[in-house]
Image (tube, rainbow, N blue to C red; front, top):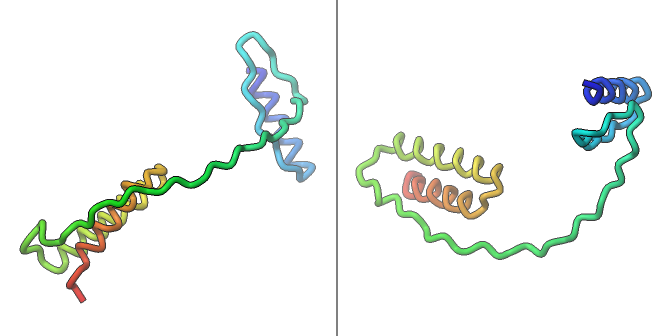
Length: 110
């Protein structure tokens, strides 16, 4: 397509000149693409005050009685991975819950 060819030319020129490529907006269905796209002007993003996160009740490692040390460590690792995944998804409440679950699994293992 003309859009892909024009974009490739733009990126190649940026590589040659060492300039940073600007991401162009995709053209509308009835518009063509110019090899020299108009510069994109960054728009101001309004600042949003951080919202307090609701407290998540602490988990108790006693909810799974009789787990061996290695099983509890394995569960803690799984919860930590889930926490990292929740952070990547901007799910801070879920991330906090998984971190607290992981810490609860580690209670008393020292």
